[in-house]
Amino acid sequence: MKRRNFLIAMGAGFVAGCQKIGDTAPGKALLEAAPNWHKAVHDALGGRTALAPEFGPEDVSPYFRGNGSTNPTNGDYQAQAEAEFANWEIAVGGMVDNPMRLTMANLRALPQRTQITRHDCVEGWSAIGEWTGPQLSTILDAAKVQDGARFIVFRCADNLNGDDYYESVDMLDAYHPQTIVAHKLNGEDLPIKNGAPARMRIERQLGYKHAKYVTGIEAVASLDGIGEGKGGYWEDRAGYQWYAGV
Image (cartoon, rainbow, N blue to C red; front, top):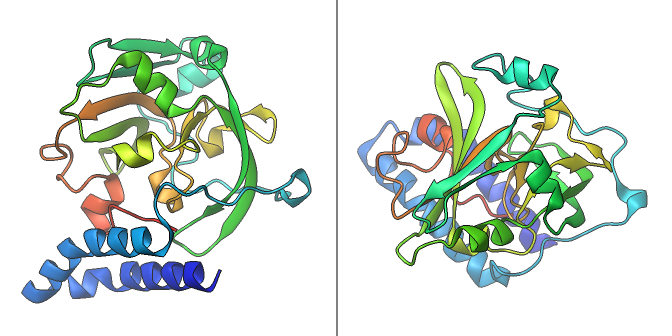
């Protein structure tokens, strides 16, 4: 626990100071190297294949707040919500042999995993929730990811300041058993403020990696040319670490 708290404190401190550090040339180099450093430390302290702690029903937080986008107004999201997401589809593509489009009915028909885990936000708050959905690995296996793919990119319906939200993970986190496409929170359909109708749960990483309002799952060889090439919305704009392990 002390090691874990140390990592969280180090990560939070780094993010808080990243803007000022990034203004200098040596600082920019440090900022660019930090994700690999953080990933290496995380590997050394326990291994990225280890399971995140899971809790009992009695530990579930009475309220799980929404954060960031809580009700997208761009595109057809409002119409989709009005129709209770009956027409929602998640495109699975990129470097796959079997591209597909998953409806919410398809998602619910897959084998499901339920896990009670803690969500740690980079802003300093935490909450415990029960999440249900299929493992991402099940979807990737069905799509037949090609050998050259190194990352999975999550496309999202929410748009912040004119830019679509996105996130990404490497294959180790993509195939982690606790990485799921969640459509339920605490036994109920996912609320809009928490990412309805489907969001990612990347349980070994901080909250901004858990993409909400997922519309696409894309296998790629490189993150170059996606956004600003840093692997995620906040990574591109605020210098957040691409690997945000906790």
